[in-house]
Length: 626
Ligand code: GLC
Image 1 (tube, protein in one colour):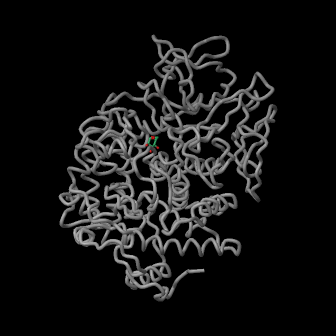
Image 2: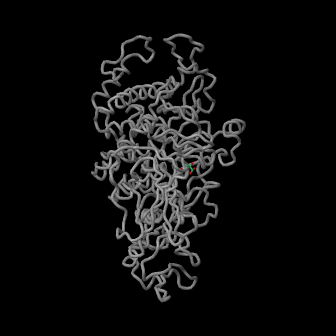
């Protein structure tokens, strides 16, 4: 058997089916008792050895690409398919131009798709991708479902995620053939809403297995607990056996990503999805597992570790989240803070109370209170606050300074003076000494509503602003990733003259349909679903015709993005989740973590005391301070 190179023992989803084994599937996952580092080799893979000759079966279910259209080929090279062997009577799958896809039986007889009941032969529900509008009567939602199913990636015969983009017209795949953690979230939610829980459970457990493997970049390893940005299922020859192959899960922690960006958001999303899985499926046994509890704690420890920071917000490098390129969001970007807050609340609910984690839970509670205070107080802007900033005194050296971060009023850009509606407000993108990034970042604002990081009043004001600035934030396709775009010198300096992030494109003011689902959860939570419904209707009118692009360009989102992938999975899933939630608004509640009485009262007393209170003023009554 190949060497086991896991961080964590024993490997839980190691699908070892050595020759002669009669076990056709993955063995059930065993509990991880303790974690021990194994670093015999730098290359670390989760391995799935191919099964015995007897139980060989088809498990390649990447249902797009050449299997259906191309020449004799089984899947697109380099795609995460499992090249498992076929059942004994079928020796090959291919296609010819005249008759389409065939299965070749022993004795070289070809059975064309029309002739066989594929479901019986290889267990596929749907094998053929319908072309746009091809099937009469098919709704956009139906099409989205079949596309989502086609994007499913299998490992060891089991669904483990969805491919980032499934664009047959695009020759340069880059890393869009991988399962991205953040991209899978709407896919996972769509499956949860549909009652298909296995794929989410598998995703959670397999990605957990990848957590903090000893990945290095130029001799440096990222912190333990880091979750990868993405992973790929690769088929590699089995060591010492020419006739067999094995599947491996190959994670990318950013060490091969463009710009070598650290995926800080991955672990936070993972915790959020884990909680959602428990809520939707009712199966809390996953979150109770020792290895899963350890995984949660490792993420928390990484986030709660002491550093040089003066602020309770997480300090991260540029490009550490959905915006994974240089966009001037290093420091304390709102998106990371909203996910951090959300993940802390989810973890708090899921962590098993035990003596060993008392300190961690105390630190978590303290952080929740400090973080919510900091964001609600210092990130918030509306007309009133802007006017305050406009009249700020600067250079206040004292404990009771009003302008704590020494913000120079000239930073208020002319666009903002015009743009801020009289009714409404939002949380700014970033806060640093002498720097407020006034750009409106959508995901951070929407997830602050969902996670309760914003107060109820602020949440309503954010939605008021969305309504007031509809043509800027929604335009012809929801939803702008940030507003406004960086232009001219600012663009050159901040993005490093990035040709992909030109004004109103991609991360720099492009419009991303995937954001529809977060918009919908936020609107339903605030009892204003009509806002989301309007956005969804707009998307529905063109997204299928446009082939489900990754993003749109121009100020009003009129063009399909310059370098946008088509059939981008999280555009498809984001749309689907929005539709599902609008049809069943109660389900959106599953994402909302209610703060319990103790937390609310501690937060209230923090707010009750003046934000500009003097040093030494009393700590809140129900403080969790250790
Ligand atoms: C782009 C996006 C990133 C996404 C990835 C895969 O890099 O910026 O957020 O995860 O594509 O779709």
